[in-house]
Amino acid sequence: MRIDVITIFPGYLAPLREALLGRAIGAGLVDLAVHDLRSWTRDVHQAVDDSPYGGGPGMVMRPQVWGEALDAVLALDERPARIVVPTPAGRPFTQATAQAWTGEERLVFACGRYEGIDQRVVDDARRRDLPVDEVSIGDYVLVGGEVAVLVMVEAVVRLLPGVLGNPASAQQDSFSDGLLEGPAYTRPEVWRGLAVPEVLRSGNHAKIARWRRDRALERTAQRRPDLLAALPEDALDDADRAF
Ligand SMILES: NC(=S)c1ccno1
Image (tube, rainbow, N blue to C red):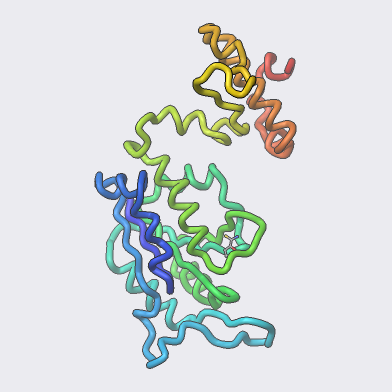
C-alpha cells in the first residue's frame, strides 16, 4: 500500500515513521510520502487560505492550491487511489472503515486546517470519478486533519498482512466481532491484593473462551449498548443470549 499525505505541517506526520509503522515501511509493506501543500503555492507569501464567502470567522483553504497539489500527487503513481479528507463533518471512521481500506492500493490523505478546504476540491475530484471519503475520527474538532491521519493510518496499516507479529491479535481486537474487548491480565497472579480471575488460570480453554465472551458482552452492554443493538441477528448464540 502506498500512502500519501498532503499537509502544511509535514513534521506532524513524523510519528508515522516510528515503531510498528516504521517497521512496516522498512519491510516494504507500506510506502509513505508526505508532501508540503505550500509547494503548490505561487505567491511570495505561499498563501494557502483566504476569507470565506458569505462571511464568518476563520479562513478557508484555497481550491487552486489544493487542486494542483492533488493532481500532482495523484500523478506520482499509477495505482488507483482513494482520497481521504479528515473532517468533523465526515462520516464516522470505524474499524470497519479501516478494514475496508486495507483493500486499497493507495490512500491519499488531504489534511485541512482553519475552517477546512473549499468544498469544490472534493466536488471536482468526485466529478472526475475519483473515490473521495470525508471521514471523522470522532465528534470533536481538532486544529487540523494531521492528528486524524495518524489515527487512521495506524488503524489501517496494523491490519495489513505481515505488519502485526501475531495476526490473531487483529482478529481478537475490540470491534473485530462487533464487541468491545474484555479485561486482560498478566503476571503476577496477585498484585496489591487483586487476584487474576481464577478461570484464566484454570487451563480450561472452553471455560476461558466463555468467560472472555461474557466479559466482552458485559462491557459492551455497559459502555456501548449501541454496538450491541447494531449486531446482526445471528451474531449472538444461545449462550450469549443467556448471559
Ligand atoms: N474529527 C475530525 S476527523 C477532525 C478533523 C479536523 N478537526 O476535527
